[in-house]
Image (tube, rainbow over all chains, first blue to last red; front, side, top):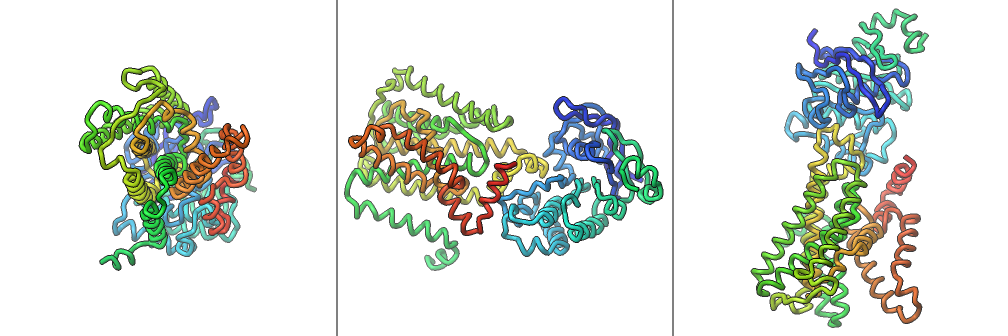
Length: 235
Length: 333
């Protein structure tokens, strides 16, 4: 198992608050790794820390064998990490097309093929190509956010709670898409919806109070009812 | 050939060119010098307001000292014309120096403050503008202080119709140039920065570079407006550095509609016409002499009832009021 991303003893603060105490995990290439945990456990902060949006105060973040701890966020992004934040971060005044084009680092054949592929999965984006991003529904915004992160040839995608606030039918669509994207790229997913996480994920890490407390294969977690109840509140 | 060019143009570009053509023949129909002078001032302030729109409307950067760049353009050229002969060559060199000086100042202010939150930029531009005002007042050997000075301009620019046409051509060229810039990938990044800076960084853009670049472009355009202003008056004094000038340009941009480029042109026309009209009413009531009170009231009303400005509101109505909803959401957030 070659690991694409490795976090070792990572600690991070948000202002004076010590949020991440001891985060350790690896993301193997070609798999979907899921970060699980209750609200406020530190999952989103972990993704933001990987992206450089929160500084690493201790420990290291290694991506493709290079220490990227405390690099500037734009440099981290340019090393091949795509990020879909929890709030989607759609540019409301830009059209769907402009939202996608602003993210494209190149406009070559390969990028166009990737764009066509993702647009085939999300035909709504094609339909509303000239509509401002701010006018899309919650589900369409999520699709756009995922498409925008996928359109470049990133080695790793960080996706934060893609099912949050979406109707079940839209969640189903997003899940199907991530399953298809899994064939093409490595994904680190934060997800509260355990059903979705268990269908997509290959392995999991549980974060509790800013620490990774448990990990294993997703299949094992489904069998361990006590663990799920203790850390995830799922019975 | 012309047919092919016209066919390749968008509808809006054709409208803008049509309006420009009408404005071009206007001085040959309207012969009154005061009307011609007022329209020339509108063109000049429209250029100045567009430069402000680049910052505020497209990138979300607030400047409280934008008059500084206007003043730099006006004073640098005026001093050159005063010290050297009033030839076309000297004028070109003067413009080049003015624009370069404005670019250097905006680069320094930008690099110092734009990595921080935008209010630091606002405060530093205010401080710098104050500094330039004091320097212009105190360095009397160079600037002749508050009294200002007159100077000669090249022969062909002494005709008010020529100044009108030169200002109009500059306005049209700068408008289409800035429009092209804002519609380019660079412009899309500026809007992305305004909308969500953190997200733009996460997409791999070095935001500071873009902010500094737009600050320099804005400073250069503002200084060019200052150059034209000085040429139209053939006189300069410290009033070009006053905060009132920044307030005027802020009003022009907000009333016209931020992030539209056309809006600030419309705003400049409205504010200049209001200036002219209110000044004429000074004998009727003392309140009309205190036009800043009236402007303040208009500003409050616009912010409350037309936060998108004239052009923004029209565009919002045409696109089903979505921008209004977005603005409400932004305010709530």
